Length: 454
Image 1: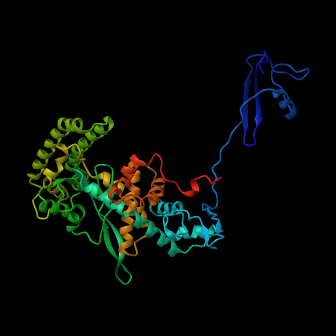
Image 2 (image 1 turned 120 degrees about the vertical axis):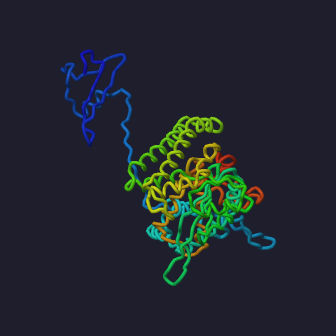
Image 3 (image 1 turned 180 degrees about the vertical axis):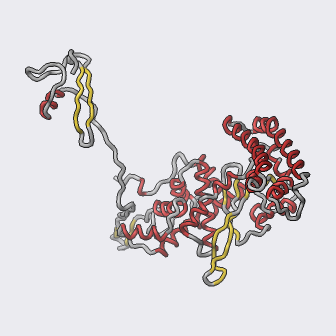
């Protein structure tokens, strides 16, 4: 306590350690025990309370993270049954609306099950074990049926989203493998998802049983006339040859990887190539930092990247005329392979210099592919091709939700209830991109989140 007895500091033990509590009086003085002087005063618990009597001070708060053992709730509905006196007919109120008639699962359970399986990659087997530990008897077959029926309701939304992506001016396409169906006893078939990324922040994962080039036409359609960005896989180049109206944009990330593989054999030349390519990416980083779009973005690329690209192609021509790089078909030297790859795609690799909507590489789609390999580490394979198609449908909506910055759980809880009553011609409004605009402010909720009737 200070000499004026207007400020009090108390050192006390709170169970974990010593704390200092301070209190200042703007008017008046602290009351001391008889015979006590200003300075350090030892107080008992009773004396401390007496000293602070009449003073108002904040309560110390502490927070701890806890978890309930079970996360499932049983909703009980009461429907009075009445008997008419004149006809002795039994009547009752209609059953509460549900996603599936006579289903035991609330929409919150369906959405949670899909989120656990496809966002957090928790297989139905583990979800079934968690249900059993909570005292809920529900077969794994029932869980699989519920998931399949729920995804079936979402398929029209997926198709509408894919069609909107096809109509865009620039799309990005890639492919990623998945085991689906049995090709022979004890052997799973190697199949593929062909993700298609649209310019409005949407993605779809169409399924195909193989990696043939005709899958590109099946996914994009023969009438597709926009810009196509991809890696160097030959299926895309074949599609561009067949559909002349398509502009093919190449991938500088794959070009860079070829030169990275040549570092051991040709460290000086490969290092120089990587240095020049790194300068292209530095301009793209500046564009992102400044938030440039459209004409401003194109102007900066034209001013800074275009001269650097012209220098890079001249350097490639000089390297190709080196006497120690003997030409061979196919090229054997790693640097020769990198030069052949780059020079064979000059036109495709320069598309981004003339179109601001084209990225320098399709890495943005590769980042969105992560849920597929992460899921495969947990569910390993799809037992049937139908199951693989359903994985593509639900992942298309969940990943797009994350791209749009909305909660997949809130979205699924809403659209699973809304889709059966929504006009089929307006199903595009239920895609995550449109749903965010039309329904996100007042989404449909589960009965679990609604207050009970009075």
